[in-house]
Amino acid sequence: MNAGWTSPTVALVAALLAGLVALPLLVTDAYILHVMILIGINVMVAVSMWLLGVTGLISFGQAGFMFIGAMTTALLTKSLGWPFWLALPLSALVPALIAAPVGRLSLRVRGVYFFLVTLAFGQVVNGVFAYFQEPFGGWYGIRDIPAPQPASLFTTLNKVPFYYLCLALTLITVGVVYRVSRSWFGNVLWSIRESELLAASVGIDVPGTKLIAFVVAALFAGVAGSFYAAYFAYISPLVFTFEYSVNMLIFIVVGGFASIAGPIVGAVVLTLVPEMFRMTGKYQLLAFGLILILSMRLMPQGIAGAYAAFRARRVRSSLPARAQSPGMDRET
Amino acid sequence: MALLEASGLTHRFGGLVAVNDVTLSVNAGEIRGLIGPNGAGKTTLFNLLTGVLRPNEGRVRFEEADITGEPTHRLVRRGIVRTYQLSQLFAGFTVFRNVLSALHVHARAGFWAGLLETPATRRQNDAQRERALEIIRFVGLGGREDDIAGSLSHGHKRLLQIAVGLAPSPRLLLLDEPVAGLLHEDVDRMMALVQSLRDVQGITIVLVEHNMQAVMRVCQHITVLQFGAVIADGSPAAIAADPKVIEAYLGVFENDAA
Image 1 (cartoon, chains in turn cyan, blue):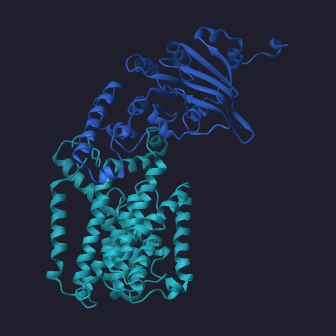
Image 2 (cartoon, helix red, strand yellow; image 1 turned 135 degrees about the vertical axis):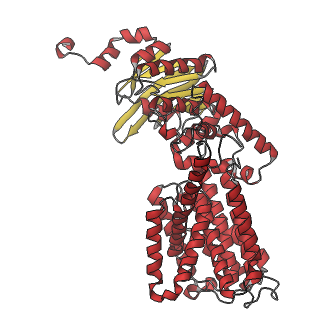
């Protein structure tokens, strides 16, 4: 079931990985490492949102789950003095545990109503954390969240350890989501997208499957949130907003829905673009908007979709025509 | 022995009684026809039997077990599979992937199985590929494995629906108008296929169909519905001669009734 690996893709992924691991040796500019870390956080959230998105559901509650993860880390490390390394797994677990009942309720409704329920959930999380000064810090948020251990390594001035931690967490997230998306379970998610009615009538537990995807998405949003808290040392309700969830959706749409490359490419490009246009000052958002519109017009299947189509054209011109389908090809 | 038994099934949509006190018993090895004019409640009855709808009243039993209101996906594991009236398919998938996906209940398909794929999982799931090809050949779609389902002709879509319905290895297959919109020779082919499902694979079949000739030919036993209630039940010959059935289909002249 792991078909579809063409040799240029393998080479590309290998080169990218090598480049990412070697980056801190080549680049000493802290700003660049900071941007890379931002990208890593966004990739984690976008990829986890994509897994649920495969079934055709977009959850606008991702920022809420990320906030829960970040809050868990903040409270455990700052108020209780736990080490980050213990807080991290718990910060993944808590959003996942909360996602289970939230998912059971919200997955009863479909389409736009699901957007609305998850949106409301995100707002409720935000509202609760903003309302209670104790212990959540209210609108001011929580400052001075301790860095991971050892403290001598994770200092404010040295971004390299944070970079590697972020890289590791991002690779784990992407690896797990990729593997699952290419497995039979992943195919089940695609089947549900194609036809829920038929999926149920061949024995697929549609609500149960969606719930698992929802919980897994929340789990990785929690991981991203936990890292966010440790890296920025500051969290507040102004960070994990509805707009943040919308950004994640934009990443997926611009990158492309068809494969996991979509949310990754989207998160990378759309985190970089606003940074590159920073010098345009007040026109930064304008440029961002323009690029969004252009990419939708020119690449309706997303950047990854456009690349796949380009590769398919090249392959087709050199080989006899063959159906291209991800994952569940006849030949393994 | 009765494989499927429904007793006193009633379902209302608001004030409309779509299915009214229907009692039905299907024996193992039968091809049962379910006919009736438009709006007679055939599809609603199917939905009640397959867990898509929960009846307001009445029970459904399968192999003696009460399955009333059990969700569709669990009924599939018991051996009850249905097809849909409209060409419900995984339209964006290839023919092969449609059937492979429909083999779900035979696969190790869980989240953990996917994440921690063991050689055993892989072997088991690879075995399903062979099975998918067999089923595709059985329904006569051999050579079309890589075609996208949505681009198939209407007749081939119908065949693929049967293949998808066969994949979970049903013991009872409920077919909702499998020959609707098919040309004459395709109707014959489909009916021969339905017959062979029973004869070769031993699957009990309940068939909703508008095409009377087709139903009369393959079914030994026909149930007629009108306004949600059973008005006749018996052999094709008895049904064809039943005045209530003729009236339901052809209507009756005012002066005749007088």
